[in-house]
Structures are given as C-alpha cells and as structure tokens.
Image 1 (tube, rainbow, N blue to C red):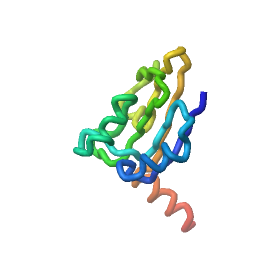
Image 2: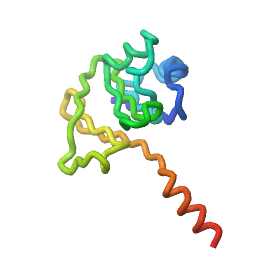
Image 3: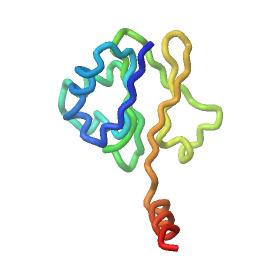
Length: 123
C-alpha cells in the first residue's frame, strides 16, 4: 500500500490535481491544511471527499486534514480511546478496509504557543 502525505499549505481546492498527477499510484492521500469541502461549490473538489473525509476545527474551516482513497480502498473514521474534543483537533484516526489503523496528524501551533516561543527566544 502506498500512502502519500502532503502539507499543501492551504488552497488544496486549487492544488489537488498536482498531487494526484505527481503520485498517481498512491492508494491513500493524506493532505494537511486542507479546506472543508462543505464551504465550496466546486463539484470536482467536493467529489474527492466521497472517497474519503475531512477533519477540521469548527471555528476555522480553511485548515484541516483531508484523507482520500483512490484505488477502491474503503476508509472509515474511528475514534481513539482517549478522544477528547480539544485534545483531538488536528488528528484523524481511520481504518483501511483490511483493518489497518492509521493516524493522520496536522499540527499547527496556536497563537499562545507562538508568543511563548518568541518570548523564550528573546531571553
């Protein structure tokens, strides 16, 4: 099984063909910083999610994780044993049809962390 992961840095709706053309043999694509398809009318972009899913934060639809299957694999979102809403933002656990479990991760520091890191560098 070939899995491709890419942080597209947003605007995946404009870049998805680049990824699929570059790695046509992939079975699963995991895309970090991917927009929620529910906020866009582009039919082709929305169709991608029929073969996968999007996980994002409720307050910011522009960044999330998109997970897609292109070679007939069935993907099923699963919950983690310790899946607390705030803890699990940026994580997308799922199972592939054969039972293999995968955890997709997209981490972005919040503003508080950035300020703390900047203050530490000043010292």
